[in-house]
Image 1 (cartoon, rainbow, N blue to C red):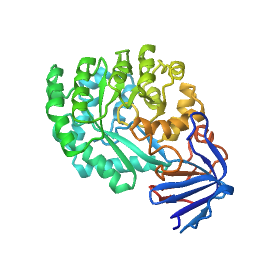
Image 2 (image 1 turned 60 degrees about the horizontal axis):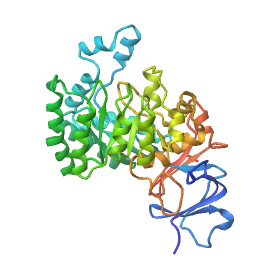
Image 3 (image 1 turned 90 degrees about the horizontal axis):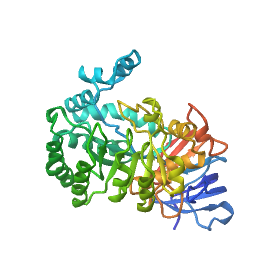
Image 4 (image 1 turned 30 degrees about the vertical axis):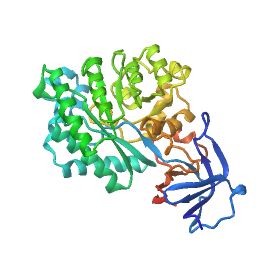
Amino acid sequence: MSWDLLLTDCRAATMADAEGYGAIDDAAIAIEGEHIAWIGKLADLPKQSAKETISLAGRWVTPGLIDCHTHLVFGGERAGEFEQRLKGATYEEIAKAGGGIVSTVRATRAASDAELLASAKPRLAALMAEGLTTIEIKSGYGLDIENERKQLRVARALGRDNGVTVKTTCLAAHALPPEFAGKSDAYIDLVCNDILPAIAAEGLADAVDAFSERIAFTAEQTARVFDKAKSLGLPVKLHADQLSDMGGAALAARYGALSADHIEYSAEAGIAAMGKAGTVAVLLPGAFFFLREKQLPPMEQLRRHGVRIAISTDCNPGSSPVLSLLLMMNMACTLFRMNPEETLAGVTRHAASALGMGTTHGQLRSGYAADLAIWDIGQPAELSYWLGGNPCAGVVQAGRWRDKRF
């Protein structure tokens, strides 16, 4: 028996250790089928043949990058609103003129599956070019049964068509659609009684998310959504405490959520609860930067309570039009004072855990998915160091070459 692929003459940041890169100098990586069969020092390589052996000429190898919080599928864009705000228009003025999230809902509802697929593909391509192998894509711009289903169908198709792993999340409890103005409880009834059961019946979602905030839904309404998701066998995630402390971190922990995302205003009691529950903190520096926020996430509390920290783009048309996960790693360092080891863990090992994939993805170790990113760098810290440029030299996805530039 022989391995399918053997990579030699490389340095591996396995990200398999609780701290540090888990680096292996002069490494070899053997791949069989879709999984890593063996990884270690070349000197310790078992005597077994391989169908294909490739020298990586001293390049670094990491797990494929994982973007664990995006809204990648949507209609239209909002660059015009961005320009209006910079010229002095307020968000309220823009919203009253038909802009804001309502404009994205309108454009998404008007777009066909094919149109949404075509507009999302170049956004996905930009992320994939930087070594991305797994991405989470949320709905939340349809806000009715038909259009939430449409967003999730397109997200699934993106994965099939582009050779990347896509995890889908139903975010029907994202905002109040215009036809339910002033009737938020009635809309939550629709989400719980109609939208979530329909999505679950078709197997379109891997998880359920909600936006618990003053401008969105209360903790009580969010709990109703989570109760329904749990009854349908779907794990939950939460947009929590982005603009104020609504107790979102504690709520997410109480429901054993995969992740609580944003969490700039989370109280320490909520952070401690996340640590005990194993809920991952997903930090979104792109939204923090784009909205010119001032309240930093509670970094020291997250570290003190042992909360795993993931980093993501939050790619969306309104608050984080970001198409570079590498840039988010730099911003996590410069804005949130994380270190490069933490940010690489945040887009590999911890990002996998935020998607419920921590036992199969996000690390270079025997038995894990053979999703690898290959880099023309001298040390892993360069992935967080450079602003601009793309040092990705190749990608192996599920054991097969998806991209090879050397």
